[in-house]
Image (cartoon, rainbow, N blue to C red; front, top):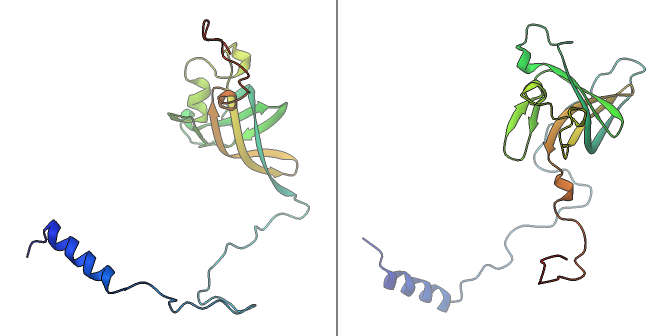
Length: 171
C-alpha cells in the first residue's frame, strides 16, 4: 500500500487529536555514589623510568626554523623522517612519521619542509607560517604529537571597525 500525502496528514491529525504525548518515561535520577551499570575500561597510567617527568603542552607561534633529520628513523623512506621545529624560541622534536595538517592539505614533516621552498621564516618566505603543536614534555624535552600549520590563521578575524569610508573603501 502506497501512502499518499493525504493519508500521512490524516494519520498525523488523528495522532495529535488523541493527545498522545511523551510523559515522564521510566528513567530515574541516579543514586548519589552509585556505580554505573557498565564498566568502562580506561588506559593504565604510563610506566616511566624512575626520575622521568612528563607533562603536556600546546603552543602556537610562527615557525622560526625547521629541520629534517634521519635520527631515530632507521629503515624509513626519507619522506617520513622527523626533525625539529622552533616556535616562540622553543625547539620541538618532531618524531618520524609525523603528519602535518594544513587547512586544505596534509603532508609528512619531511615533505612539508623539503618540498620546494622551506616553509620556515629563515627561508625568507613571507608572511611566514603559523604552527600549532600539541605534545608532551618528557624530562624538559618538547616532543610533538599533533601539528597544524597555516598562513597566519590567527590574524584572520581580528580588530574593531570604528568607521567605514565609503568613498575609498577604507575603515
